[in-house]
Image 1 (cartoon, rainbow, N blue to C red):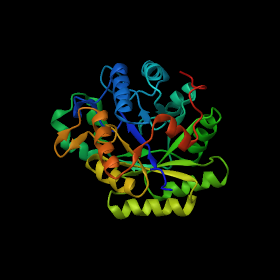
Image 2 (image 1 turned 90 degrees about the horizontal axis):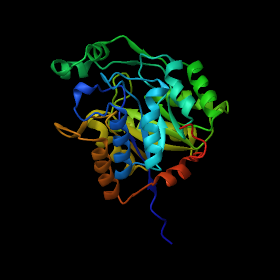
Image 3 (image 1 turned 180 degrees about the horizontal axis):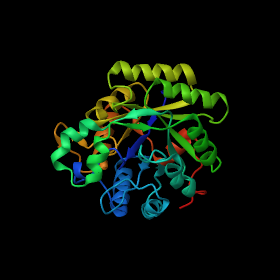
Image 4 (image 1 turned 180 degrees about the vertical axis):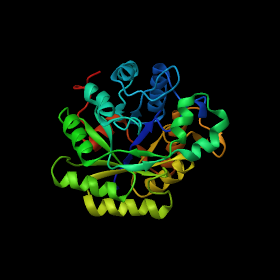
Amino acid sequence: MARPPRKTIITCAVTGSIHTPSMSPHLPVTASEIADAALGAAEAGAAIVHLHARNPEDGRPDQSPEAFLPFLQVIKQRSDVVVNITTGGAPTMTIEERMQPAAVYRPEVASLNMGSMNFSFAPMLERFEGKLKHQWERDYLGNKDIIFRNTFGDIEKLLTTLGANGTRFEFECYDTAHLYNLKYFHDRGLVKGPLFIQTVFGLMGGIGTHPDDVMHMKRTADRLFGDNYRWSVLGAGRSQMPVAAMAAAMGGHVRVGMEDSLWAGPGKLAESSAEQVRLVRKILEGLGLEIATPDEAREILTLKGTDDLGF
């Protein structure tokens, strides 16, 4: 008997802290825009939506729980999509600020960055210098002294605090060392499989986007975790679709969305994260893969479901 097609999870990150509102008129900023973007991505085929919040006045990243609640409630009322709340926030925030929304709202999934790293958005400033409307955008993008802090103590605090609520994690790994950091916590019993590992390619300060980089991260994760993890990829900027295509062909899941890339093709701004979901869905279905529904994603990742959410 032929084996049924493997189901591929599409995660969509609809907004975030890396891009700023002046870079694209399509980046969602207000609570209603973020809710609509998440719902559109779900309708297009995303099983998981990864969410940040912003100040509606100037688009500045906002990690207060109050900023999340309006769009979380709308998404839950109108969709069964899996909600993934960021604990990354912005690299300039403290770990206490970053963890608050997920601690309050107890989502099925929260992101968790697996190591400290240099962070710089300077190339973006060079590209968009004349288009930025707010001073905070210029200051943020031009800062070459950002260290995105994710110490072992920070990671343990997130794991124990959020894990106690039944929240599982999207482990964001920007380089090989982050996989080894995750192995440390796995060996200590602070995380249990199946691990949902999101390998991130193409952000300045992390690993690159060459196919050898993708293969290296996959081989390392295979060696460290065997069959006790689920692999997904995030390619930044113009590498979003090529990295997704390569990983999907290798058995991986994929993440797209306007947090990671503003583009839908060379020189063409994406009009929504849903547009990117539709593009990657064409790639997956062209490879003969089936797209996971939210409930299938819950089963693949052993999530707790929606009965114990705080929103």
